[in-house]
Length: 330
View 1 (cartoon, rainbow, N blue to C red):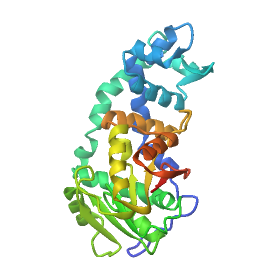
View 2 (cartoon, rainbow, N blue to C red):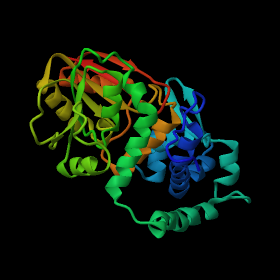
View 3 (cartoon, one colour):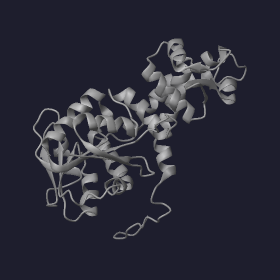
View 4 (cartoon, helix red, strand yellow):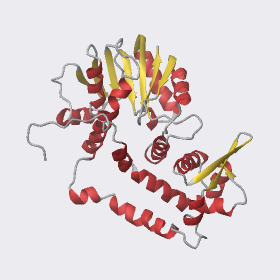
């Protein structure tokens, strides 16, 4: 343990903790494997005499095409499936290890162990933290957001030069961690966190105070309440919660409130245009299927949403980390 009053210096090599992030998201990998086994994806492909299309797999496992596409993409990213492209159509087949270990017909199949892990052990581990110490769920979520923006926040707010935007509203800004990164990067700007009353209350108690005159709070629901006018609005990890229709509804509201020459900064984990990755975004998209009505999207899909709402000159910057930045101008 370090003596009181000392600080820990983060070296350049350790500034992006890839291994720690992999550990944090390990359960997403496990549940992807569990789900594919439980739905019979590997068994279906093993019984086929040829690679199957998305439509054939969805029909075979009796699942939606949207959910199946996300699941197959994540399995491909995990090297559990192979993809083949013929005349523009993508088809899927098992990798060698999937055929040997993830099909029920294999003599060395692990499927029974996987089913037990999914239906029994996985559920028990959900309560591990409660067994050690109980905490408020909202505070835990906000601590997660704090930690993520501590390592990715500066990258997304400096992906574009935001210095011309002096009045910024961070919609759904939660703990204020991204707002703090903004004011550190741009000394002339002020950032207002616009979030639900209970979130603002918790933020003030545990994370950010009104003592910092450049970071403040505004209580409200960005779907129901009027948005104050501003130069820039930040939507970080917001649109992936919602359908295209709801996203356009929110972006249109932002466009109308935005000052001329202003803009909106969308911060999300971008999928590759061909669906090949990144694996983190593929796994997050599956997580959205479980938790929300939204999904992760490609840069082209976010550009289409912004354009539909009225924004122009949409630019995209990939940071090389989890989250990327998309800027639309009014």
